[in-house]
Image (tube, rainbow, N blue to C red):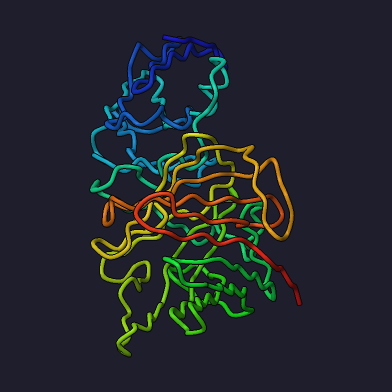
Length: 324
């Protein structure tokens, strides 16, 4: 178990346990009930009371600390003659022990299909603009994609509008996305995104209408965070790393997409250019386990290419970007 000394306190860390030893604190541990990664941080604060309870949830936005979701009341209390309260915080421990800290939002979008999911959203920790290099959403920007889906020509137009929508107290950017297949409007969608102070882009929902070949329409797939149990997800992380897996959306039984980062330096070519440092993600959903989609993102441009690799035939490439 790696150990390090911080402010006179010895800190030892394993994937699920942090042990603190110091002049005023006997060996005690905080056990995080999940095993997906280490606790995000360690901070020592002056407390009150003889046996202060350590909160199981410190808040995702404390120094980039993600929320601790499951078994919220299962963290052990710590006793200290000087009433020290140890509150979880991991990058500090990992850095002190010479280990790489976990992704900034590693636990904010639970990577386990079927698991309980309820991210903590603090409107004060969100900013007005979406400036993530891999997912920039400057109002007035239009991106046009062309390709084919199941043998039919397809054109997607994605317009970042100047409109906003407040969801769960967060002001979101409204993006208008239309899908034209073989000259017919197949889908008409409004998506809602917002960026937190850590650079993560959150997806707060969509209002979509699909036009079916028989002339009927469907709103299946529409959802809004905070309505009927739906929860926001991450569409792009502020500091993505290979292996990161996260929920992109959550409306049980209707919208449960996940993404996994496969590469940070992938080569990709599209009409807008050729790139060697693209971010490659794999998108999947337990609702359609036989389908997998690969997406390529380029810094400063955003999504450049999309390809269905399992469960169908679809490929789109970015052909044009305009601003104004």
